[in-house]
Image 1 (cartoon, one colour):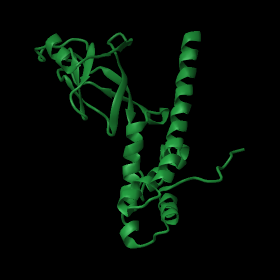
Image 2: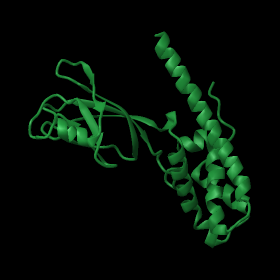
Image 3: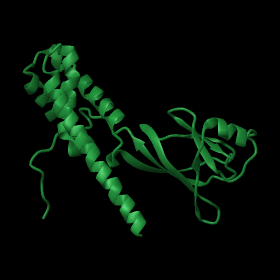
Image 4: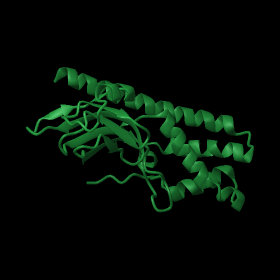
Length: 213
């Protein structure tokens, strides 16, 4: 038997709830609600790195190319591995970009990769320059797919609807020059703290399992 949740927050229901909480249906406010929602999503992304933001991407390196494109909405790399010609998974270790340039100054030379670094928000540098199109797997934190009229739900609406609601209301306060900021700030902070506590417990559980394995 499948249990159906009694309430599921969506982009449309969040928009309606914000209007009801603010007691405003005038166009000047309603038209700004998508902006409030987006600002809330960015705020949560800056404050949290939860399991819901963890993603795995598998791609192929390009032989002779030390630069690798990051996946969309990348925020922070957790780990990186590749599969060598013998089919064995090998780690690629994080180092500073300057270290990679000193370690492998001639990027036209190729060898199995050992290190990676961030070039910018869109690219990694790999050293040595890959000598084969190795299969690469990267574990990373992403910015959760943003809500919109065409993307009604995401991880936040499913697992943190209270953070989304109060965070969106909080973002509306400067626009409205409203004195309810303290109330929404308290509710939002409580929701964020609860999410952080849940993830700390999960990380502890994962470490315990790893130690016992």
